[in-house]
Length: 486
Ligand code: ZN
Image (tube, rainbow, N blue to C red; front, side, top):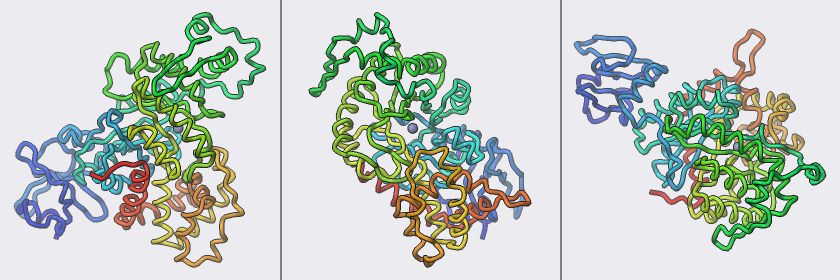
């Protein structure tokens, strides 16, 4: 049976047997709208003309419009059903970014956030991720909107223009309705500043007046003081970043023209952000009138891609306590980037921030998709794994990882059923993690995608397996962060 037979009997007990997504059935202005399977595709069906661009069909005495999932129809959907449009979520106590690089992870993510007391940013990509996946921001938001509609997720979700570095990119994302901008200030942060370099630096008098010899009591027993060398160093490192953040805020946020949150990221630096540096940046931004919802410092230790925290957990805990006090003092939340799989830090993050935080993940969702491949199509997985080994050197120029290829087991000596175990080991995880762009873009000599099309076909067939994997894996992130089930 197909959706056509469903139309005359809308309200039938089991829409699923007609290929209709049950949670997608809505009525607006007397017209029923739903999503259904049409062969391999998913389409929007409306029983009257309410704006969807598609084919008008009359069959067996019923008339309807069959509309494809394209950008034009995503815009219509968001207009008719506001819950499918992104909203600001950083104002909630707990928010969580799940980058869906592939445009297939949202069904699993929806299940997680239906069950946990946190708000998701379902659409979240950086420019680098867009380039590596050949996607556009339109596509990133549309994909989230379609799944949100299909699965009837009405809690609200955010869209994050992640790690944007230019006014042009910020404007592009905001104009598409992104509800959060993460401004990456790293190009304006001066790395490698030494005490020696500071020797000749003269502190402008306004800064010495504001900071030198002063003690800042920010409550909760935390006091901060600046000596001359520290202040010089901070000004040299962060002066440009503060000006840049101020400039972008004034251009796009101050007027309130866009309904979006502002996050400042200073995490992509050579050295961790000390609490004193964090305080200075926040203090100066506040003085300039910049209101941010979240700030992402770089924490001590290493937040490498797709593996647990590397570093001194005790120091992390002590510094997190101060960073979170600073955030509370200025009235924003901490944003923890590269949050994928940092399980040993999660209880600390949850506790020190008193259950108020934003955490971002991305790569781990891709890794779960590849774990599905290892389970469901071992032979395809083997081909990709071998290609990744050859592509690793190139990929590692984009990412900081300490992967040791020698520690990756020889997959020729592993049985099919052992392959998923690779995803419990750091070195294979990072191998697959950082080569995602190269894997997706690998072409055959005749110009076709070597893996991409086969991967998407498999993921479409195994949607439930992927959804289950994400539910348990992202659910584990939230549980460790201390997020309650609702
Ligand atoms: Zn970051």
